[in-house]
Image (cartoon, rainbow, N blue to C red):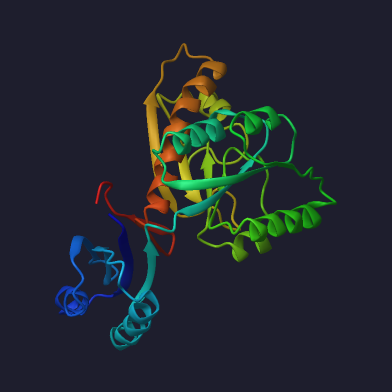
Length: 285
């Protein structure tokens, strides 16, 4: 069954649920699921509403009429159609565990998306791309060629009509211009439990501090390093006799799961960015 998913946010006000659901009911849409959240502290309202997609429906007309309706209530909204799967680009460096996991989940249908290309600043994962029959673009980068390399990335994103960029352990800092251009569409995995242990070698930082829990964080990339809105996190208990290398190995498993959950939430249109936070609606709806 195809579906239409609306994400809606606005200042909280009376009658929102009745008004929004009535809008769709009056147009004979079957509402499959509706989730909502009110941030009482900030006075903001958030909704995810999933509709059965009638093949006879006029999508352009629906969006036009909803725009008029939304303007009256001050709604900010977006819509996604399930028969138009996200097209996802993977940015990689040398580590294979995160991109390999995403490619396998796409192959087995766990991620309902298309990954049409892999972009790398090193050539180490060319064989991985070949194994999954994915075009592999090796775009080396230096401090002096960053602008040109990102321009090449943008050209590929346009060519392949990419909706979402995933930094699958892409160990480069994207420029402020790039992340602003793709705001809300770049997901990063940080091998640390943010906001602790930012920057390089977080597992070694964790070892030096003798922590008993390590973790990983998936977030939207912003101009501020490791400061973007957090989508998902995971943790695992560790012991005093775990070496830094042990922590790295344990962390890789956490990274795989956390990144996959974040990508899945995004492509299922379950995330609303609200300032520095995210509202992530539950899975399976």
